[in-house]
Image 1: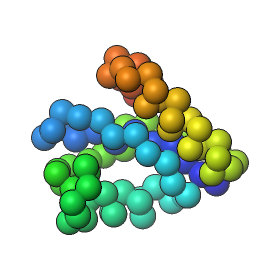
Image 2: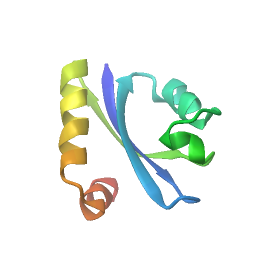
Image 3: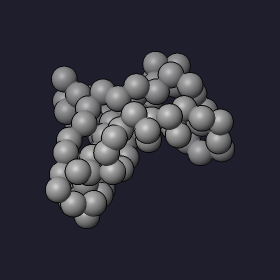
Length: 80
């Protein structure tokens, strides 16, 4: 099972969209670890939306679609 997920950081007031192979908890630990990537800027990321897919390609396509919308309102509508 593969996932497309949206994380939110209250500190940064920002969303992050990604995809991974389940389980999400394992991937979230990497986001919360010390690193120089975008999610390394805060330590309060939490999953606010998750979708499941049968293939990595489908999860990645969904991630690209969400990012292509370039809309915070669209992301927030998914999380509601």
